[in-house]
Length: 542
Image (cartoon, rainbow, N blue to C red):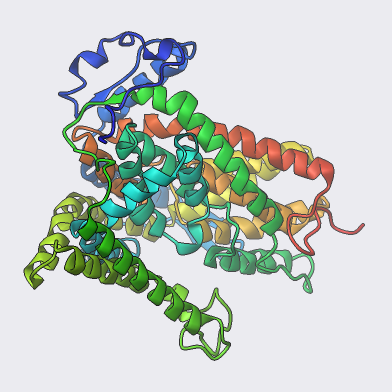
């Protein structure tokens, strides 16, 4: 049985005629996106359409980062001449704007061009993961898995499951982007739904729910250390553990899942409408005998590899345990996760292909790898310019000054405790539009904000928790995020003419919904006086 043609929801006027502006008339020419007609949320759809049009009028992402880099260089010259500086709260030393429009700046820009690109953290992991996963896709292994999942998953639960898995994937770093996003698009496409809806739902879970998690992640460890150092400005004996925000953030997984599911099915999917592009979905036809046999052997391989990982992790002297950093967080497995994803893609994919007959020679393996490298070419170009911008922005010290000035402004507002927490969330989300690194921002903000909230009677753990909420809100809408171009490349697979505006307008409803829901949850949490984590009270003892 073949999958029926994908159609927009028929539960209201959203499936009627094309909205004002006639965008549906050229949907196919625009890459296969055919928006639905007016609905009770017509004002919202019109607003998102305006944002999309404006965003798509921006230059190519690579050009955008070139322009931003030039702006930062010029600003560094102007602000350096003006003597702009702040006292770095962590070091106690003056942090001045560094003039990059100088002989020394020119030397730094030219000498740093190659290292900036080669050492840019997000690029290598994406490349290596895709090499392994390409074999799994090319052999047909991932396609077979998709067909089995579609047959076993109730259609009503597909969105919820995708968002939930995305929200729990941050322990694995950027893996959710590389693995879950394209898989979710394929799942939605095979289920007769718009694949862009699957991408949006997965992105909302992976990035919009970055802070929410059922397991501890390396980020929890890093931020707890920074919070502890900031807290010791007031109390030299204060201890902050990596579990400081666990209760709140683990509960947030379910909030993000429900919010993401609601926004996907009530706002995003009606707006995206029917997919009419050229990408052919995996058909929900029964697997052949050869495919079933290949799938069984491939899944057996996955089980064996998983057992190998467990064997290396569970014993305290396991080969994946670091004697100097015992436990999951410090393990060689987590630190070498990219290599394991490569193996989990390559080996089962190879086994499936050899058993099912889709891989007969070694050249078939390399052809599979090359196919996705063609997709990653555009990402590579954009990443080159992102790497330059990130380092130029860091060298200029503008990020330090922006963060410290923002924290000082927050202190000057002289708000009550709850409004101050809300202001912290909004300020963090705003800074995140320009400065993406969670730990880098907190290293600059914590020495100002943590002592300030402690003097008001609020615990460092609560301050860190509010920061984590704000840090997640705008990840999905800022083009300056290192993963934004990768998601845009995935969008362009199904909609070749998708631009920055397309992705931003699609994800903006998630960002606003999370802002409202997460902020309300934190306020209620404080009102109920629930601890944010084990041994992490909301208030300091009087």
